[in-house]
Image 1: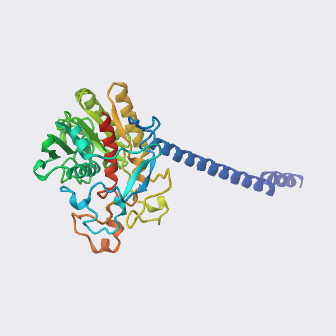
Image 2 (image 1 turned 45 degrees about the horizontal axis):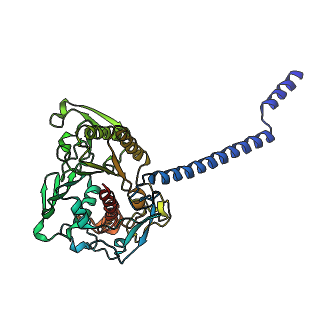
Image 3 (image 1 turned 45 degrees about the vertical axis):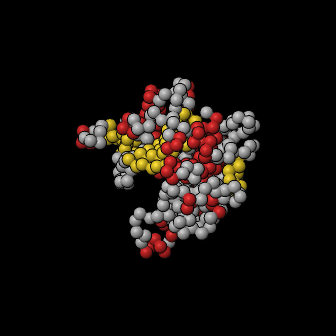
Length: 415
């Protein structure tokens, strides 16, 4: 009997009391609340750091306040001085970017002016730019967003040049606009990943399995190394978790070594190859170098307070919340660019970052959406749901890329 009572007493000691359970539950709830508070603070601080990061690249322009940051500001509706040109009047407008031509009725996207907080962005003067470019080459190198900016620049100078004194020539990967009277060219070179890849064909570049040669750039670089102004970009084509890297040649792919490398490491490898080429081959007394930061996409409307599942389709106004950050750009890839450019600077080669990311992030309504030429037939299913074939990556012209070029123009004037 005594033994049985002892066993019952031991069992009772092993069973936690109701008070103990309640105490453990309260502790767990307190821990979860603490985790949520810490996470909220972290996210808030991260967003603040991102906002600061997008705006760290400032530029002091002669005659402006020494504290002026051209990249920190707001969009101001200005239908008196904008647009800087009319879509129909640009001789070389691209059908991919001609939103008014392809049916867009709300044209307010053409009338927004970028206003820095502490100064004014210099007004674009096509004649002044052409004088700067006399006997020189301005070359944009990169993907279709850099081509977007190139078309914008061609349109910006087009109207001040008479038809008999300008020409356009396409030669494979390179497009050359020439202002004959100035002996100046404004060019675009298709190289979406900067280094060699199986997407280098300017027309047939959509491949299911993207492959890069991260250590090979000469095939591209020999076309633009001697330019007077070089404007680079590369981001859009790197937006995947990993990329297949080839050590070998595309001419003899069976003899090469392939390895899948994750982002952002593979992006860094490519930029280092690009940087090494510049360091060795660019004439520092002649060539001015620029790198355009990431152009954000607007694929998720819920990020700016819209309906989940929607995108830029039917948007007609910019985001007005200062410091707004969507998810259409990658801060960690931006930091890779910053690191590579910083290393170049320590070795005496300056590449000026033009930070278009934050200012472009506000412009959710500036994309072509469905208002562009479609190279493939639109299906009945797409017609029933237009957002499924909306272009929320590129930009209508006149529009946001004109401001990118106004920023570039401000730098070139000072050189």
